[in-house]
Image 1 (cartoon, rainbow, N blue to C red):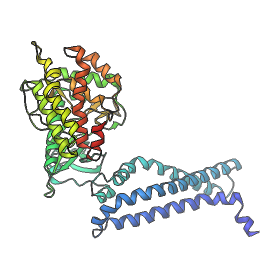
Image 2 (image 1 turned 180 degrees about the vertical axis):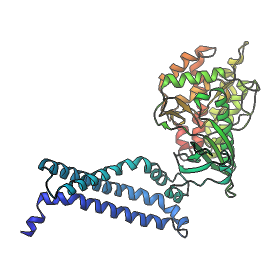
Image 3 (image 1 turned 90 degrees about the vertical axis):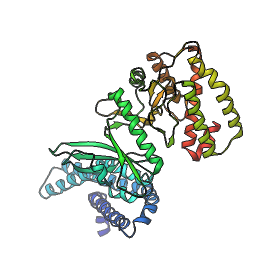
Image 4 (image 1 turned 60 degrees about the horizontal axis):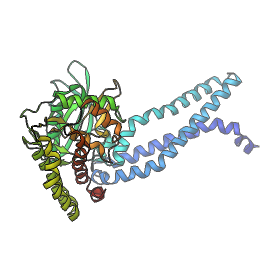
Length: 444
């Protein structure tokens, strides 16, 4: 008789939300205890090594359990709510109905927390902080005095959390309240070492140049500098934060803006290059000023070919082809642009334009470009990057749309060959930046 009472399906469904909610809370308290052990000062160095692996194992197994418990709580609660409502609320059931409603709503509300916690969890699993996972776990990003000094006097940092992922830098979103109580969001990027300084300084100057020409296409850059961290030396870049949707950019809007950038831009020296070294990915580019586009491109290409050999090893067949290209193909194919009275206009290009360096404002739908490696070049070099296999916007729709706004240079019938030559630069520098797969990239 007692077993029949306990195993009665109706009674089990009445008790299910209580049991599943209790298990969910116990799991949460247990993880809070364990994760705080990781944050103990004595454990932090080792914790930074362990946390990415721990989170990968935990979330492969734990997510199924938590989602299962939440589903049971919501299903059981929903069943009891419907049962009580259909039966009519009689004496003694009013309070239980209220509890089932409250419990079901709270269980469902857990899912609203997913977008908040997911970026932090992903950052730990992918070790985005490169050995500082305990900072990701705490949810706070340390903002030092040098960064804080960039904000107006009297400002208060409301929050600072790691945001997004980057192969060579650490990135964060800052919420800052000024002295009259208005909150504003900022984007912060940091990199370490001498190469980090080149990367940050170059990107700041590149973004400033783009912003001066087409301010509606670039998040406003504010400043760059060195943090107060002595070892390793760390550098920061501060800009406007815009909430963007991660999706493929609209071809018409992107290409219209790009053509306008190329058309409006004016080289301050009338030459090709840039006033400071810029980096494509983690690789510094040779962008010293040259009056001839043919000479400039030859230097640019030779520089990355030399870097590729240094990073990925000498490949004799590639070396032979490279020398032929530099000695014969570039002077003929690119040199003709400056022959017989022709001129090439130095246009400001982004120089690393793929879908990952574009974003669409979630609020306005406006497309923005960022992470630039800008310099003044032949405008056709910009779209050559879209030929590369790693680029999801290599769809010909983008190139065709751009050419409707900016027609090819003369000789027009050689446009496709020039584009292929320019794309070699992007493929080679990609293999330099992705050393673990560089040889495979070169062979492709």
